[in-house]
Each structure stands twice: as C-alpha cells, then as structure tokens.
Amino acid sequence: MTKIHLIAAARPNFMKIAPLWHALERSVWCDPAIVHTGQHYDPNMSDAFFRDLKMPAPHFHLEVGSGSHAEQTGNVMIAYERVAEREKPDWIVVVGDVNSTAACAMVGAKLWIPVVHLEAGLRSRDRHMPEEINRLVTDAIADVLWTPSPDADENLLAEGVPAARITRIGNIMIDSYEMLRGAIEADSTRDSLQLVARQYGVVTLHRPSNVDSRETLAQLVAALAQVATALPLVFAVHPRTRKRLNEFSLVQELTTAGITLVDPLGYIQFMNLVSAARLIITDSGGVQEESTYLGIPCLTLRENTERPITVTEGSNQLVKPGQLAAVVGTLLGAKTRATRRPALWDGRAAERAVQDLARRIGHNQ
Ligand code: UD1
Ligand code: UDP
Image 1 (cartoon, rainbow, N blue to C red):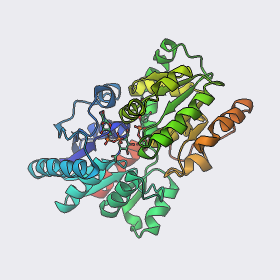
Image 2 (image 1 turned 90 degrees about the vertical axis):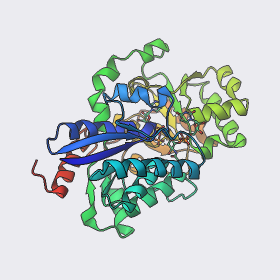
Image 3 (image 1 turned 180 degrees about the horizontal axis):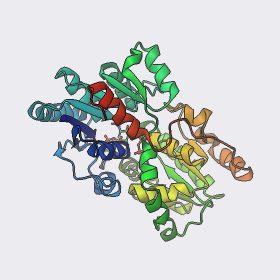
Image 4 (image 1 turned 60 degrees about the horizontal axis):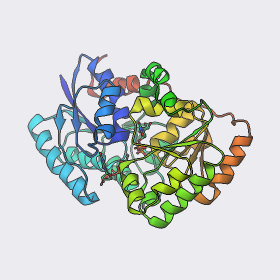
C-alpha cells in the first residue's frame, strides 16, 4: 500500500484536498491520510469545510496556528518533520500556495519523500505577494506538478521544470462544487439573508496588500459603500479583515451603507450565495475561479492575478478601487458577456490526478 499524506492547512486548501481524498479512498492501491497543519483553526475557517466536503477528521493535526511568516512556516516544518519521520509516507501532496504548502514541501524534499504540488505553475509575477514566494519555492522542489491550466504548464517549462514532471489535471475546486451542487442549490443562506437571485453582489477581501493598510482599506470601504447604492452587497468577512476593520474603525461605514456583514461562511453556504449573485467583488484566488466556472462577473481588486485564464477566458476582470463603482455601473447596465469554462475545469480533475499518480508509481488502476 502506498502511503500518501494530503496536507491541508487553510480555507482554500480544503476544497482542493477533498476530491482527491475521496478519489484516493476509492483506490485499492493506496492508504491516504489527511494532515491538518492548523494554519486556519476557527470552526468556520476549518471544521465547517471538513463537514461540508464530507472529509473525516484529520488523521494528524499539527495545531500550528497563526504567527509571522517565519514563525508559521518554521513551526509547520518542525511539527510536520516529526510526523513524516515517524509515519514515513511514500508520497506527500501539497496544495495551493499558503505557508504550510511550502513548509511541508520543504520537509518532504529534505527527507527524500516525493512531493506532488496540486495547483502548480500559477504565477502573479508579484513577489510582494507571500503566496508567490510559496508558489516559487514549492514548484522548484516538487517532484510532480499538477497544473490547472496551460499558462501554468508554460510558466513551469519556462522555469526549466522537465515536462515529464508536469501533468495538467485541470481545476480540482470544480470537483468540489460539482460534488456538492445539490446541497448548494438546496441551501437556505440566500433566503435567510433575504437576497433575491441575481440582485445582489458578494464581497470577500483578505489580501494583506488590501486590508493591512488603513489608507487602502478605507479606500476600498468607500468604494464598496458607493457600489451599495446601486446593488445590495453581502460581505463575508475573513478574520484578518475583521481585525483590520475593527482596528481602523471602518465597520460602521459599511453597515451605514447597508452592506450586510457576515462571518466567514461554510463552503455550501458561501457557494449558495455566489452561485446566484449578480456579480462578485473579491481579491480571493479561488473565488476568481469559481465565478469563471459559473459565468458570474467577477471584479478582482488586485493589480495582477496568478490565474490569468479567468480573465482571458472567464468572467474575471482586474479593477482598481477608484474604478469599482463605475465598472459595477457599466456591468449592471449591460448584458453579461459570454465567457467560457477553461478546458479540464469539469469536475473530473481528481480522477486524472489519481490516474497520474498510479501511473507514476507503477500501479495499474
Ligand atoms: C492565508 C494564506 C493566503 C490565503 C488565505 C486564505 C499565507 C501566507 N496566506 O492568509 O494565501 O489566501 O489564508 O484564507 O499562507 N485568523 C483567525 N482565525 C483563523 C485563521 C486566521 O482569526 O482560523 C486570523 C489571525 O489573526 C491571523 C490572521 O487571521 O493572524 C491571518 O491568518 P494567516 O493564516 O496568517 O493568513 P491569512 O490572511 O488567513
Ligand atoms: N469561501 C468560503 N466561505 C467564505 C469565503 C470563501 O467557503 O466565507 C471559499 C471560496 O468559495 C473558495 C475558497 O473559500 O472556494 C477561497 O478561499 P480564500 O478566499 O480564503 O483563499 P484564496 O483562494 O484567496 O487563497
């Protein structure tokens, strides 16, 4: 039996790990286990996703918690090295671009345990983003790179990664959406917030570059307040952002503008809101992809994106805070532009991932 550790750490990891977990669980040749580093720990940033995505409780929990970049990365490395040395997994799968991703990839590489990076090859080319550093480090040392889109393959090849290490499996988050589509449609979150389908916008913000400076966050809050005069907004507030909104005394400006603030939502609840939204305003990586899949206009409050296919093929556009209200005005007055779903964003990425791993290990499925 091939022992496989799946590393899960933060909110955007869970919907990428879940489909792989389920697909590996069905495979007779392997013995998967979930390792939770504890980077996210609030029940609505972690446990809710295990429940929604039908995953068992993590088999190993490192309980690392928050800290500076070095503290968090270092603490995950120390804690995971102990587990990896004791458990001796044959393979480690890391996902996405959070600190725990790079930390566990480094542990695996130094213990000579092969590492797969799921969601490899994405590049914003903005090294001020902590995630870009995590992506570069992880891709440089991973043995197998599972990519979601052709741009990711091209980035890796241009960086000298041998083609044989790269397999395009598509976008695994879509597998989670499709697995839970029925539950998402049946969920009552939209109704309980008295929102009418296609007549509201959903907001999420948590990038340090947007929320950690008083000036930038105040500018964003003012822009959202302006948008709210034309479209009801519901804002699911990330814990980092909640802290900053409180610290900078900006909550009242949002509520006075009539914006509904809610705590971070579970996956099914959040996708119930997203799937019937008129538009999305975000700086999230995953939400750019989900809105592209659903064909819902997405306004991304960032200078760049590591997911350019959501702009070239999908419904995403990069917007500066000062332009937000005007762009929303234009969108509300226009028919939604036709977009397409990128190739291999089809709900079958986990299947392709498992086939690829089995082939590389030499198991005939
Ligand atoms: C992390 C990832 C980011 C990802 C985001 C998804 C890195 C460098 N950043 O950012 O790529 O987009 O997760 O949501 O890995 N906090 C809580 N409860 C929690 C988790 C965090 O209150 O369960 C608060 C703490 O005050 C913490 C802060 O949020 O200090 C930031 O958490 P952290 O995990 O360091 O970074 P995120 O901003 O969540
Ligand atoms: N998400 C969620 N509840 C929320 C906000 C986001 O379930 O309140 C989901 C969202 O659908 C997507 C993922 O979390 O699947 C994205 O995570 P996040 O924005 O925290 O991180 P990023 O993708 O930017 O790294």
